[in-house]
Image (spheres, rainbow, N blue to C red):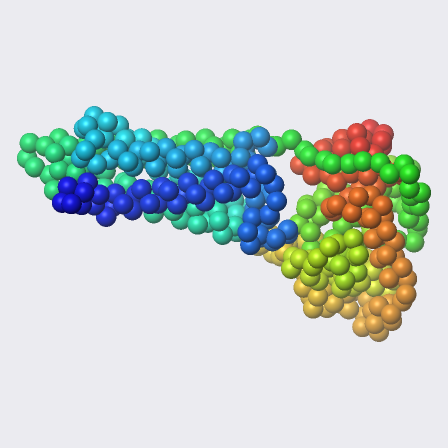
Length: 400
């Protein structure tokens, strides 16, 4: 029993336990990446979902970050089992060196992904943050213990003739080497943009009646040769990113493309194709009606309202507007009397249901969705050039 206690002091138990915890968390996220579906507690559109579905969850759109993390934590767990006095000194020294590089890399990655969530995505994933905290605590513990141990006294009480497992400077150097590896990974994420993704189809058996671009909100000219219908939700982060590209697409196509806006709430209260209500889209129906009321009350004010709905707050990234804030902005733009009168106009519900009908005819699967004739596509472009290419390949629009 004494030998067992000497072999497994508290710090070694903590190192092994934290390594196992990190392995469990990252493996779960990796399984989610491979199999799809929702992580427990991360409904579609939630902050957690925004992080896990972002480009930053992968390297180059190919390698999942969670997979790399799982591999690193597995290596840490194996190394932690060879840190005790029962292991030959040379193997134990190798295990400590590997552990120092690994924890340095994990801690550096934790800092990087915390920065990404704060300033690039604007949302935090609790699973990711728990993994990052595990990395930092594990790194602090390993870096603190490694220089204190000798090949004769693993408990930290050295003797005059004992050789240190890892000196203080070599330990710091190995941890910094791991930090450099994390930096290389971060640089790779920034430099290697993932390939654009799209999912589309055609509904040849259904008579698709295009909307009249002169009677609905349009980005671009309603007389453009190609008017693409855009289905979107004002609480959808993917829609917000796509919205930011539309003006540039119009510019690069010389005004030959325009986008007829078809707000399509992802909420069963006004969209029967949605099976159940999700908290992330709980205000979608009302936000859509407010936006359409602005169009009815004063068409010239709609563009300002639409841009404001998708604009980030000063100093922050974008978050969906509340009903109260959207109402206040609408009243500011068109006046209280005109807004109240417009909200009672039956055209609003007719237009909303027309957008919902198009949504159902084109698969009822996701937004944003672009529709042109009988063709439709759910694009996930990286930039305006990607979006133009997707529309050419999937919708048959001419290249600019």
